[in-house]
Length: 198
Image (tube, rainbow, N blue to C red; front, side):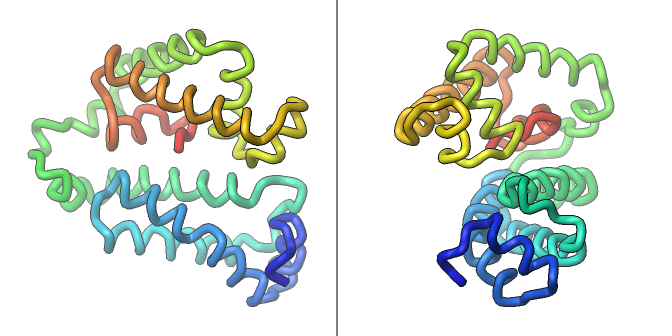
């Protein structure tokens, strides 16, 4: 069963197959944990987040669509879960960042639509700086959750090119945001919550 692709495992998970579910867990829990820890810093909070995500996956298994990326689904759920966690456990997370709440006004970023829209405008301006092909790869991977092989097939390019385009475009966007909006790390997750950058 380990040789099955995600799309092959999903129908089994929908039927309640615990082995198929365990394979998906083994396949993605490290990546999800690394992403969570990158933003909340705390290993305990990161592990809690990943466990919650897989619990939700099991609870929602009947509505899974094998034609869509389960990896993208998992990371989207994690992003939303982290945002809720950040809002609900600010003090604990900010302590891990070793900053004071008044120096990192998260609520202002989330609740002040004018500031939020300005950050999104800067983000979109950064996207416009990319070449057409790099922008396509970046959006397909970060916004739509496609795998490298899926993107390669869709754009008729090889996987190495996909990886290179994504790596360079991701680095450019993060640097662009730091230079033009002064954001990174926790800020990046909050400000770009509508787009899902990993």
